[in-house]
Image (cartoon, rainbow, N blue to C red; front, side, top):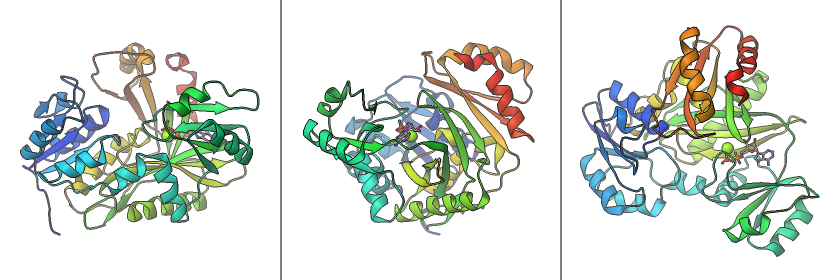
Length: 373
Ligand code: ADP
Ligand code: MG
């Protein structure tokens, strides 16, 4: 194995949110030094790292300063500019490259990549003008969903179209290119985390079932309550995508399963994913450990899940009561991201529960008044 980055070396992370924090915790446990670049002083990741460079993600000079200080550089989100990464790679080792980033940060490139490689995607049309929109609606019909091609997350930059409602469309289209997708009647949403090292070895995690509220992930359940045949098919696709993207590090593939059991790849995140947080307690290595192993080109272990698990997100409106209630729940593993500003619907932490009885534990969470808000 060439290009191995061993403990004692320094890892740079662009972005200092909770994903960077959990990456850093994993790297620190393995003996690495970690430097974070983020505009927010004392951000979540900096709280558990050796050093922080306070700067915008687009600040080329600051990124070069970071690059010169580290042995390997990674990122915790997909909205870093690929051309900036190429420039910065002159100064340090960025094993992830830019292919996965370029493909996944643009919904059109992502759909094209998936279609070209025969992965199943939802029927869709590119929309750049109101005329395109009218044509696309004729093709796709309503209900459908229009999405901006860049920068969307947690359902932001999306409008659901019904035969009676198309308000807000003009503003969205004038903000940039969009994609119109057929609305799938969902039986389930699931995701798969897969990690890969520079030499091409992979660690493939079990399928996770996801339940959203207002387009924000609420619950993740692992293993997903689907047939083993379907689970194998989904895992196979995820690993195949990782190989075709020449992935290094961790990524997550989101899938839709329709009410007629049709399978679609929804989107790809070229980084650890909210639905994979339960791997910290439930598996032999977490999605963050796997990311560090991948970018450092270390051997990728076979994934073993020790117990069924559920994860529930703690948003701003759930934080205070979760912090109090945790003392009455030995089964709760509360992760508190240490964010200073508490906002409605902002991800502030999560709770993972290992359980022998998934349905019973899900019921208990759904009955807990903390998550009524
Ligand atoms: P993001 O996670 O980047 O905000 P997604 O494309 O994953 O964007 O959409 C967010 C959520 O909206 C999905 O998890 C799903 O619940 C719902 N959704 C998105 N596209 C569709 C679709 N074509 N059909 C049905 N539901 C959809
Ligand atoms: Mg999504």
